[in-house]
Length: 135
Image (cartoon, rainbow, N blue to C red; front, side, top):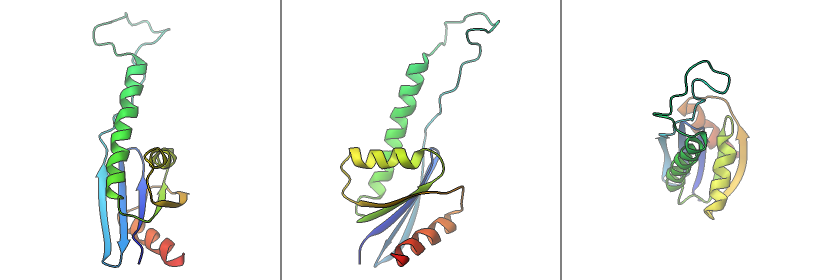
């Protein structure tokens, strides 16, 4: 039997489900990603310019991208022996994660990329199991 895996992923967490002849294994990986925010004030703000504590927006974005890469690499490690991977989740994270897989020359075959809203861990496990049983 092949080692099949599914991952539900967004920028806050990933739920990795591994299915093999030995059974199922589920693991949640939380990210430490801090999304950059627009600073208070701005060009039309009446607040005084306070350079102390100022962080450039490009620096915040670079930090965000770096944190995402670290998070995606942790998820990759959890999937390391998988032959086939199903990627599901809301938003942009699933596509970003797929690109990270390709950039790291990950050997597993990505069988599908699916949009999915917030779901419980048991629902994720059931969805992954059903997907690979039907295949």
